[in-house]
Length: 596
Image (cartoon, rainbow, N blue to C red):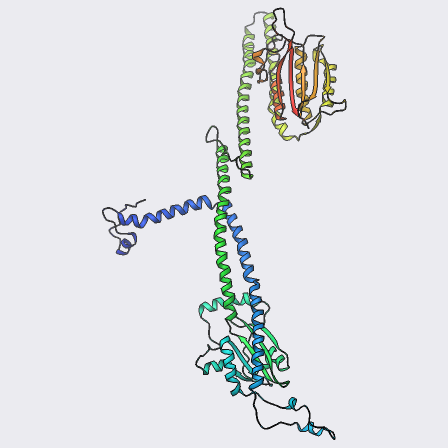
């Protein structure tokens, strides 16, 4: 995007240079601001799409695990311990070779033999002065040792010190290097700013339980544990850390000749020799960790895009459903994904569909209720308004009869509407339990035969199973399932002639329990087979108007649907008439519920 705003004439030269000089084609501005705007917009887009809260958590947790792994490798690296052990062994072998060379050729050779007078006095008659080799004292000659030590030490880049039996320093390789023109940095060199910042980190990583190395001077050689042991004839190695946090490995071996200890040789590494190798190894680990971090970030972003993006779209759709910006909002379909996002998408789509169906049903129910209540209210109002105009008692009694009929009709409608309106809530609040249909249907049939509800129609039940002890169980609400069956039995009795029977049959049908109610009535008109389950629909020519609310079968269908079942009506075929046309033997209602 080009910024064609002209610079303010009052701006100084620096501002013009910073913002780019504008000519008649604005080319410098396009070069100066185009890439910046593109990068800014790309960054905002990348942050908005990729770095959601879920994305940040995924990336942070993955990086935290990687950082912990790299830190543990840096802190507990076996490479450092193995390197120190290997260096200590090599120094020990080197020290033994150098000590052997010094003991063989670097002692003072004189014609004088030192004899112990006290030992001579202890000799008995006939004894000679034995063990002369053990008593001869050949002190180390620094002048003879220096060339040998310089030749053997120079290629190894280690520091060598020779101590006499009293612990004093006879020779230090640092002094030899200085004499040869290769001065070493002073031991107490003041570190720079960067080094002072790195010293605490290096000390924390290297120190552990290692002792601190101190320079003891030329007269305190026995202050080193390894030197004290070497002067006693034992070789020993030590690992220390100096004030800079650098690891120093030192070994000491005795300098012997003819089983006599003439001094001790101490070899030690330079301050940064091991640390340089350890640092190089750690840098390699950090490089690998950096590459792994980059790969992990990319994979985390890819993983987050497959999770956070769909979840964000689902959340936005759910928000639109809540606000009802449109008449019907479609939830994104991710059901092709065989993971939790796909399951969530399917669940939200089913929930939204059920919600819209519930809203539409409520709206239709409210409209139907208003329509059904309006008819008796209109009739009641007309009767009440006509009452003062009645001229005789006969007209007044007829009007009172109409008013009473309309009031009963309103009462019946309100009761049935109240039952239908709280049906869904009750089914949702109550937990489904196993229901034994054999016991439930037997009880309902017994009650129907005893009461008959004003109809001289008996009810008989039959259970078809492999054995008389077979159970017919479903999962649901026994009271509501009983309401369905009781409504079907009452409906069948009301359409049957006096003295006939209503037959109830219960059987298993492919993993379902089927309940069939047959009557010997006139049957159902073909155009009414589906409409009889509609709310407030009635088709009872033999009864007066307003004697039935038309909600019984609608409520029954609602209960069966809530239990995951099906209900339908059909006519039973009877024998053909004289013209060969089929006849109707009666109505049949079928209910199928999932078996337990």
